[in-house]
Image 1 (spheres, rainbow, N blue to C red):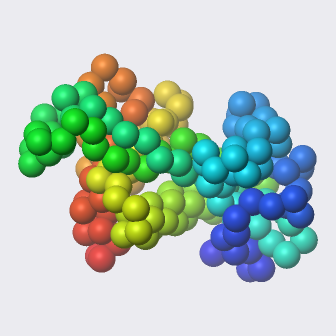
Image 2: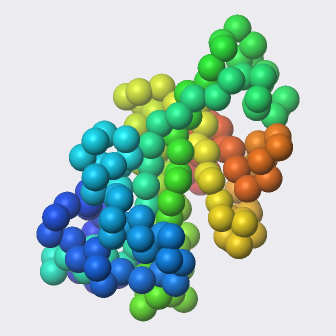
Length: 170
């Protein structure tokens, strides 16, 4: 997508201080919390960066579990014997302001979906869960992906892994 940029795990060599997406909480997360959470094995942060350590965008994935009864009815089918269903949380996704308008956010989302599917082949995960900021909700929904909404949580989007596999196979 961008010449000289690749997806990489977040490390000390990445220049987190220069990253600015225009959302102070997403900038602060990358600068102050992301590496610590990654080191503590609570989140995996993937950056799209160049060899100089400049970050054009990032996303964060972690594991979570749901009570089956809390899922939308369509996602409860076939899972009634389970108390909890494992999922992969896409908790954060951001693009540096200097790289806006290049569809980099969609590229990051696609990579996050692919990473979630690959991870689910090693450790079971039935759903990708997106905790969308209210102002980003329409952006996620504009991708033509059939997200389900979490009951009582309109900004939490759910996507079965089988739907992601179908999407990636197209």
